[in-house]
Image (tube, rainbow, N blue to C red):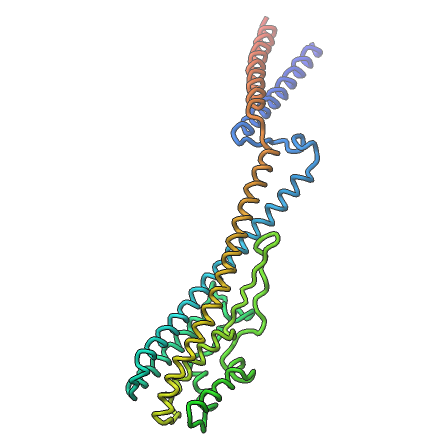
Length: 335
């Protein structure tokens, strides 16, 4: 009697374990058939994960490059937009001066000088553009505005041209202030002298967003606006002739400023193209490596289906055997 009971218990335990194993197999094979991915990576790769690890490392690195490329693209687009605004300001005042320069009156000169002051303020605002709270034209000093306000610049220039009589005197004094390290670079510029570090956007691609408010193109622009604006600045007394000369010279200076901005925008456009090319190459490599990785880990659908069907049949057979077994046990118990 004891031997018979032990045999029933062993049989029950075997059937329960076998049932659990088959259910687990069916579930695993069903998952592989649904996802197309093997659940036993070790067996599929023969225990060698070197190549797979290399692919995953490269994919991770490429993803980082794509994130960096996206971030620097946003910075470049914002910088391009800011420079476009500055260029529009330059062209607007330049064209207005050209239109009136031959018949310039005192009233015209005052209007153009006031326009120059407005364009100076607008251009400083554009060069103080930020992305996500980060200053673009201040080099590594991304937490502060690149330039102080127009009032700060004009106050310093009024002092600088004190005693100037002719247009040439004013221009020389203004040039000196913008070129003096203790002038524009210290009083108006609030950023860093160090440009932003180069950014890796691909395996062999790096770009550097090095446009700063101290760039000669921007200094030329601000200086041009300031020359005309000084003629109506409180504390400045110039003859009508000196005023007219400064307004006309401003128009000439703005031609140079416009050329400089075009050149910087062209440089930035070339960098944007390099970024986009790098993004395209990265995307192609990501696609290629992802396909290779999937092929390494994919489960053969025909083989998987065949094994699933076999496991299901075994499970159904086990149910039948279990049912018969319990019927025989019950019959033996009551007989």
